[in-house]
Length: 245
Image (cartoon, rainbow, N blue to C red; front, side):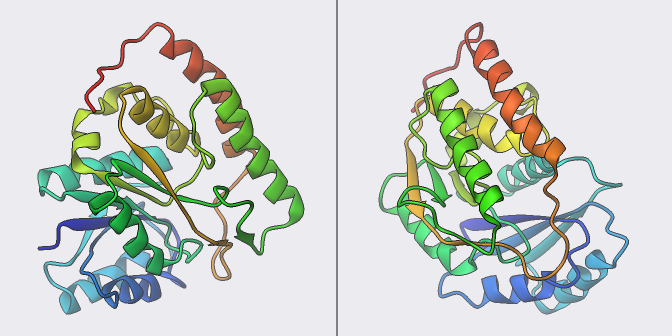
């Protein structure tokens, strides 16, 4: 068993799922993979189960009854990963917007550079996004700036979804107090870890928008992230965060 697990939530990812799994398993370091599958009608789960016979003890799947939200998918994966004693727990998309080669760099930042939470950051060295229309680039960039302003977090890419957590971070976060289920979930998890005093490291990556399959982004998801930040900051004023780091 590896010390590292990559959690990949899926819904209708039949065009990408086999390629991303094989790419992760081809890396110089061993990473296990946990697929959180939300009952995709396109047969994504069947592809994963076929590959599980080829990669026993490295590839796992947890199936859910339907689309229950990105945040609940990751929390499901976090709990599973903690039960199985993984030290380094990663979030990554299935669509190659996150380059699997960068898993090695995130791992190194956690293993040798002391990162408790390591972020694959699109904005730590400018704007490193490929294939997005300019309007979406600006919306994402200024959303992160807005989150920094409201929360006071010293994180450049607050909405990033390519992340490595050390086990101790997830062991000490109360998942029952994580309110958001969409992309605001990513902000809330970083904010909680930051308030608890964990060491956050940003590693520059190049984010490439998907070329196969359909994006799950919507105006509603973006709206949750923007307006949810205000309620997150207000709630934090009446909540004590244990300083564990």
